[in-house]
Length: 94
Image (cartoon, rainbow, N blue to C red; front, side, top):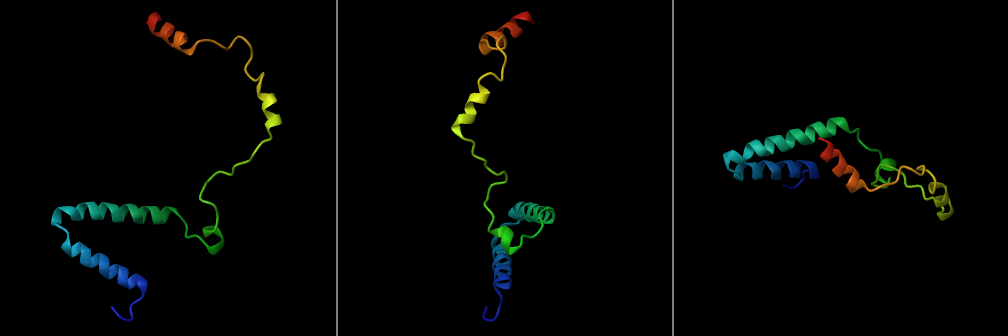
């Protein structure tokens, strides 16, 4: 395999592995390759700057502990209760 690029070598390895598989396994390989093709079509290729981006999709914004006080009275007073009792009451009514 001298003189081949890494991509060409990989393709040759995969082709050799396919020759070793039993025929009933080829359907699973075909499904997997089709999955990869569809995934590649949906995702644009990433540039060098985008490859260095963190792996999460949503930014994490930290809030100071003092902001927790604003959550104390978000739910008005009469909304509290026993969730289990409320659920059982729904089923008892049916």
